Image (cartoon, rainbow, N blue to C red; front, side, top):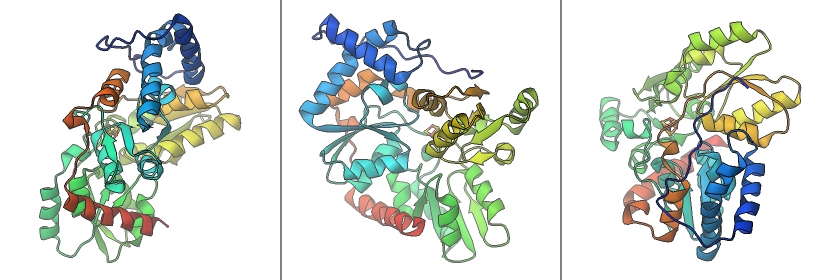
Length: 358
Ligand code: SF4
């Protein structure tokens, strides 16, 4: 594999869990190593060091009847050690809503936990790392949307799902990386405002040219903006025609022009696995490193992953110890609270997304 993955997160030693026998720890360590399926990066010794934490988190989840959901970009110890459901933000919010448990722990960045609260306002939503933001969602405020509305009266506003509840409340509809094209095409009128991702917005401008004018806000994902078309072309020259390039739509247009396939994290994982199974193992995954880690764990087929993934510091802010602390005794800043008026307006926005995505 030509891909360099981030350093494995080890326990910080802030929380001691000592109530498990050596045998219980050994069994859990073997389970973890088997599930993560990266024996060199996650040797048994590393799995032994995190086993007491995963054992304790899984015990507390049962005792307190908590549903733990994790985004794809979380680290493998969280995904394969303690999560009940793993997917992208949109699927996870639906999972949060449909889960029978009344308490949801969302291991991810803040806007995703807020989206879970919007769709399940009567549930308690725990977010272990309140400081875990996102350059897209933190780059726009509700006032910015109100200013755009005054500048372009009557023009519908679509927001990427990577926005706060307050921003969603000011927009007409949310979109995800798998439905943004379809929804924006179906909005009424000849103009639309798209916030906050300028790269996805540029992709829309290109695709809808001649049909609709797309007014784009100037935000970006600090992870996906790092990739360049030049780097992709360099790898294509080095590996040759066998290389299949898969990219996330948060990348810039120059990268997307070089890609053979553009899709959400879940679609990229499915496509990489399909390529491996069909004898096309040379793949370049242009997105956050967590996507490659899931591909490695979830296929038996040998894949040659090339290029350099980029790690999201916000997504990687959460460690097992933060989850254990939030489960044991959540601080007030770890419980998602949103004003009921904002929830009601953001719910209308998400209902419109479900309607237009059909
Ligand atoms: S990868 Fe980009 S869009 Fe996703 S949470 Fe990190 S900064 Fe935000």
